[in-house]
Image 1 (cartoon, rainbow, N blue to C red):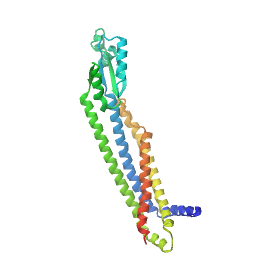
Image 2 (cartoon, rainbow, N blue to C red):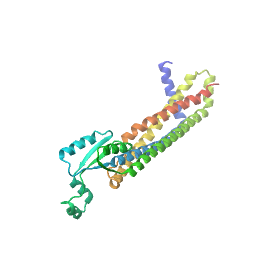
Image 3 (cartoon, rainbow, N blue to C red):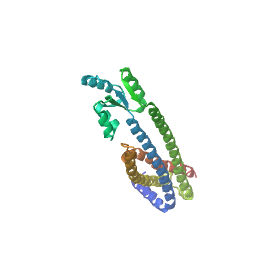
Length: 294
């Protein structure tokens, strides 16, 4: 196919898009609504997983130290703990720091025990993933250390994280399938409405490629518009909502944040492109194939 023919067919596709703008609008609206619902579900599921991950990181293991340990012994012990697989962070808490944490803002309580502090120094150990916490605890106990950690809370978060990942994956897959069906059926309807136009072109000798290219241009154009609109909407809405919710989370929980908008978009936009542009093209090809057999 020659260059000027391709240019002509491309322009014909754009003209046809404007000529049949009501059907094009219906197609774009279907794509936009489908992708908006999918985008919101994706952002919510992604942030639930992200928040759970942050909370997991706050659940640590306390390793209590004997008061008779020297500074050298404490430093050597810290090295051993850091060398344990899946340990991501080790923080040393002195006896005085432990008392300050325990007393909080109660100055009287702090003054009462500061000269005879019953609390031991400790290491606060964080693991890279909460599912690895039990294995780390077992290795710490093998070193003969007194260990304290929240077994019940750990089990809850492991189960909760697994459940969120499972259900969010199911929901997103269902939404993708629904979006795919809606987009494909809308494209098929668009082609069916113009069945007569296709038949006339076939009867006057137009080749399949000559008929197909303008429809593909329409499908791609509809897909591009269908991607741009929900991408902008999700970007703007998420940015506003995330700022508000982040303030609430910081005030209520402390140190908990939502995923940056850039991270959400990096994962979401490729899905949008495949669904909108890819399915629009595929829908046009499938729908045209039937009507080209005249």
